[in-house]
Structure formats: C-alpha cells, structure tokens
Length: 317
Image 1 (cartoon, rainbow, N blue to C red):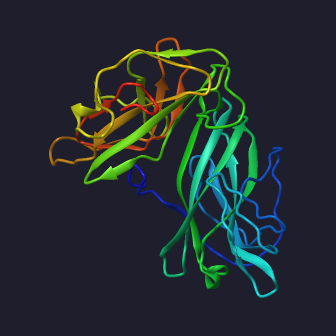
Image 2 (cartoon, rainbow, N blue to C red):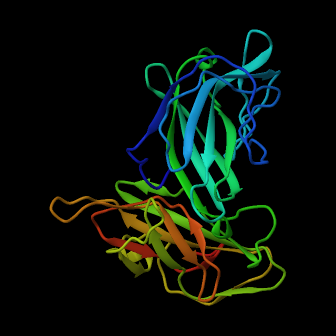
Image 3 (cartoon, rainbow, N blue to C red):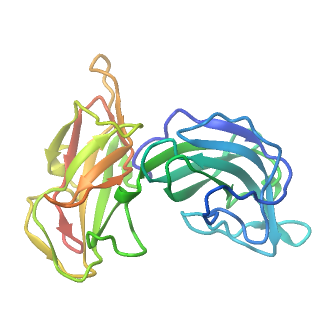
C-alpha cells in the first residue's frame, strides 16, 4: 500500500483517440513506455505543464501479437485487438528540465474510463535529463479491459524530480559510494504510515553503520520543510512497526543489506496549523556519506513529528 495519499492536483485530462507512430524527442533516450511493434500519436492535447511534464496527445497503441508495457514499474500483457495485434490506451508526453542541474524524473500517470473511473496507473522514469533539454516519450496502460483500449482519459498524478547525482538506486552499476539507498512504497493503516529505507552494500569492501540515518525533509519544489520534529526511534510514534529499538553497530559485507523505518501519523487537528506534506527526503546513511534523495510522500498532517528508526541488518528484528 502506498505510504501517502495522492496529491489533489491532477492535471491534463485527455480524450483517448486514434493510433499512429511514436515521435522522438530532441534528447537521445530510449522511450521506456513504448509498446513493442507499435506507437502512439494522436490529436494534440492542451494540458497544462506539471513541473516540466506536459501531456501532448493520446490514443491507442497497437503492436503485433502480445507485447508488454515496458514501464519502470514492470511489465503486463495487453489485450489483443481484432486484427491479432495488441491495443491499449496510451499517451504522449514531453519532459523539459527547466532547472540548472541534471535531473532524473519519475512520473505517475493514471488511465481513466470514459466515466472517470480509474483503470490503472503507469510509472515512467526519465533519467539524467540535462538543463534546458526536452525529451518526448510514450506511456501505455496495462491491465485494462479489452473494450477500454480505445476510450477513456489519462492524467498526471505526480511528477517527482531529483538531482541525478542523488537519485536512489536499486539496480544497475554500483554508485561511487559503494552502497545503494532507496525507499519502498510503504504501508498505511488507520492513519499510521511506515516507509522503509533500504541500503545495500554493492561495493567490494565492508560498510559499517551505527545509528540512525540523517533525514532532511523537502517540499514539492525540493525546498526545506521546517517545523517538523525528527525523533529517534519509530516507537516515538507507534510501537510494533519494526522501526523501534536501540541503534547498534553493524557491518555489512559486500552484498548484505540493511533497513531503517520512517514512521508518522497523518492526523489533522483543527486549529493546530496547516497540514505538512513532504514528498522528498534527503537521506545520509551515516556522517560523511553522500546524500540520496528519495520520495516517501510524507503526509504529516498537523502532527509535526516523524520517527526515524535505527539501521538494522536485514534478517534481524
């Protein structure tokens, strides 16, 4: 379950129309959401810009035989069209880096039926986009009913961008730091939120940890969030989350992993202040470590508190 509710600002409703071929952008990059054997090019849209991302058209993508979405969140088989190919709703979009540093974007799209009911989400990643550059991509829906391929709408749910030098890593080449740091999708129950931070020693030498990860909360524009008390130990918010207990020294051999938990409540109390949302968090695994920016989507309500658990080796309590 996602650790936080989706933001209220949803942009770019587009009517799904015809099919065509995919357009390439002015940045050399592989379209991560393109269906194999087909493309998506439809009537231009007029959706507003969302943090540098714009929906430019929508339609139905088609390919020969069965194919998969190829999005960053995994693959799924599409429904077959009468001609023997595959058909699924799709949308074209552009990403423009309007900032001054190399950025990696993660965009979540939601495909809707004609009646406005959510059918499925798709998550796309655009890596290492240079300042001032624009890339064009295609995103396709998965797991949609066979009769929904040619109808419906799509909208942008969230746009998250982090400096590429601080982007989280779960696979691929080992970072220069020798460790990979990432956050999971978390869990939520009755207003209690828990997100796990994960660290893997992908280097060739032992990596020592002792204590709590250092956290710096950031807002929608990656600016500092103030007024939130960071507490050591998940039990400062609630027990039984796995983020409690004292910090103990540990050494990760190459290939070993560790985890820590972020725990909070999203309670909103009238008259206490405005709710605090912090989509981003900069994480330092230990003093002197390189920071990594993750997106735990912290909806802290008006509680003003976040519990940070100690690092624990995977397989331990």
